[in-house]
Length: 339
Image 1 (cartoon, rainbow, N blue to C red):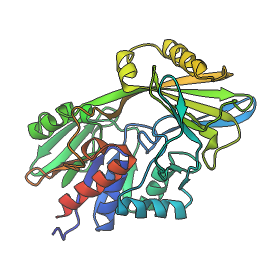
Image 2 (image 1 turned 135 degrees about the vertical axis):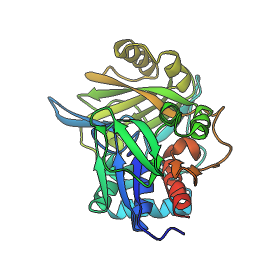
Image 3 (image 1 turned 90 degrees about the horizontal axis):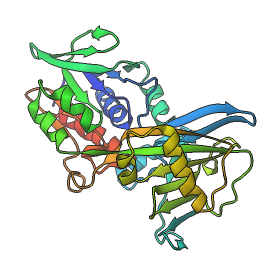
Image 4 (image 1 turned 180 degrees about the vertical axis):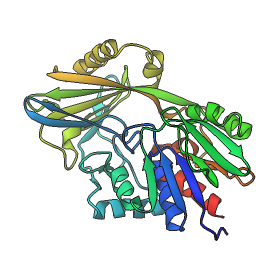
């Protein structure tokens, strides 16, 4: 077991990276998180803006999460106690191309409150004073020098100080070039686990959309999911809907412009009875989920760790996907580092 305090770098401040930092700081170690975006949360993301009818928001990444694992269930309970999450009691349905039907299984679904970024923000607040978060820092080079890690970013050049250990909590396609020189093994593992893109379109309305559901799984055409975002707890009153395209359609149109994607997905929404929105915007997720054909079997391996290099990998792509998988993977790699 590690006893002396370490200074550990975690690249990526999505839920996996934050979960890893959470476990490491609880064990008494110093952590610096590096995130290329303007805020933490990764794909648990929310778009916000203003309209003539007031402020609006829409979760355009992860739509909800489940908590089947006991450890994650306990973590979600902490988020709920802190006001950062709540159950989403949505009216759900599914469409198979010809008929609508209600889900046959009952699953507890949770969302961040008042937005999907809230659990990440809650974790950042909890880490305040224990870990450092450097935003808008794109790590583009890692080097193992004299048994310590040196990182270089696009924005700030070589980063200080050097680190005892390093965890990459980023999508597998981003691991491949970053780890290629320092750890061909880590790079090869990541190269074997593919990720797929997803287009999302956010719709805004002046009045409630006359649709008999809050969310629908679509199993025909370019859409796989549509949801009334303002039906989630803690959301403002402006009517907003989210459309997610299927991975197959998204990959086929991943380089298309946002206008043509919006037109196609709005047509699919209209064919399902959806009204025309007053405004809309699109977002392309380059790495939205793991390709099932290359995903690890079951929940294994959970994470990857090298004792020789003091280098680790974590992310939902290593632990069954989804929000729960991301949090568990961060905990998993932290335990391996500490052990």
